Image 1 (cartoon, rainbow, N blue to C red):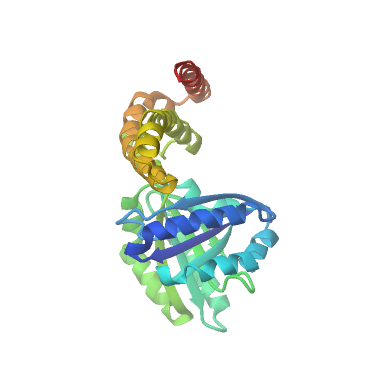
Image 2: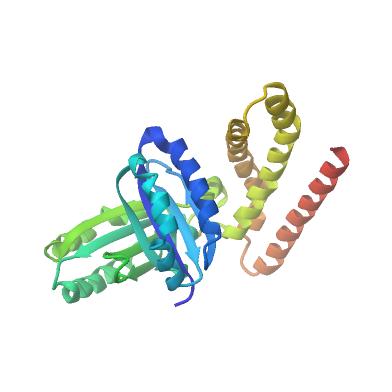
Length: 314
């Protein structure tokens, strides 16, 4: 089956967001040493589209993902967080390339629990709605995952769209509403949750209409280009001399202040930088390979220059 991802969507009490983030950071340290673990990504709520916390955890195989889900380490971590949550978690296992939240600007994760004896009829219905939504504007991908015995009782459908507007248009369309009503006698439970990936909102203004967002590796390179000097200069000029030495703040508090400043400034600098690198983010047809190499080379050169300057200056 290859690598898989655990997609966990959970609602957290508004007053417990900071505590949940700390808990998740501690959990990351636990899972990092677990056999088969590859990477983790945490996406905080992004209202109004995404109201849940979304946690993506990649594993080398289905077996290692299932081992983590059933491990005593995970159970002990969950016991310490129940009081912070609202309702139940949604935990889905999907093939690695099906992780919609990692590869598309906006996604819908639809969980359906089918009534006993109705699986065959539900699968026929699923083929019908898949055919209908294949014509929806902005659809970038669709995955349908069956239950995993002993782990996941629901059927999971993941819809990937290029924009919130196109996803909403399809979800609220009369055609889809009619199909959902048609499936009602077959299902015991049905609900939809939205996810939106982390950086795409900073690049919307440089993405030509009708085209997909820039490649993830390009967005990551631009975020690094702006984040590195911000974090470095804050630490050298403010964090260490002022917060740590003069104000004598505890490290967790000083780190939080620094992160808050960095996020705010980066959210301004990334779109500004993206505008000037629009030629690289969305290259013209026929020149993509050359343009991609030129842009990547330019950014790598800037990285090197910053490192050399900071080494000599500080």
